[in-house]
Length: 132
Ligand SMILES: [Fe+2]
Image 1 (cartoon, rainbow, N blue to C red):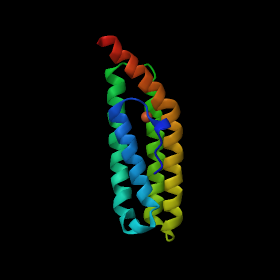
Image 2 (image 1 turned 90 degrees about the vertical axis):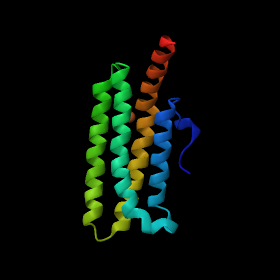
Image 3 (image 1 turned 60 degrees about the horizontal axis):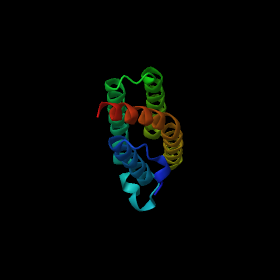
Image 4 (image 1 turned 135 degrees about the vertical axis):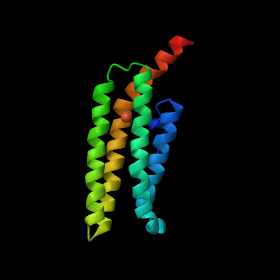
């Protein structure tokens, strides 16, 4: 399991989605689930988009001052993921691309969560406490 508690942001919805992303990415390199790579990649494509959209809704609703910059990070990663996805579709040696996707997604997610999502989560939590 690639998830660790240090990745928790404290916002339940975001944390659940992050955990699901890690679970799915894990399947890509699980030799016992090699027959699920195609469907997992398709699932990930949709789930990444849904996760980003959900996060952005929370940011908008709470008037997050760094919304535009954060959204740009999501847009850029979506592009990277799509490029890798297309490479996978076209590749002869799919395993190489799958490994590249696995490390790209995990690497990006970890950095993004630790810095940017945590920054937003702290803001979001402080905003909601203020309203109680
Ligand atoms: Fe994010």
